[in-house]
Length: 180
Image (cartoon, rainbow, N blue to C red; front, top):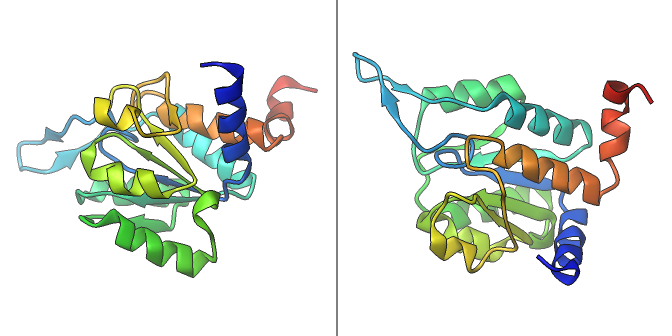
């Protein structure tokens, strides 16, 4: 990625006030595990969770729009303090427009991370579109940024850090960890 492209990414990330996440393949690695009673289990990366918390401390809101429904996602969203949660959504753009209206935001103030074709319409709409590196090849052709980390394995954290650094908030939020 050349400097010009990097500069464009940073400019887009500077405006972000809301990060919306897909779940399967973004917050998780996309695998679905069932217990012996048919209950669905999901694995979430704690580093992604910490990145989400850092974004929230910086005043950036978080939301989840998922095509599937899972109680595990409800628990994780509650644990992280994410109140914007929509599951079993097949038209993500329609819900997105509702969120924009409720929050008084414009497209350029929203980042969405997706991984598959169902995410394409929303990725084309938001101001800063991101695909995970292990997602659909088709998405990678249209998004602003492709993560270096896989979904469910640090991709969300990577984007959180990118946004915080672009907005010059990373140092303020992390100085207590470095003792400076």
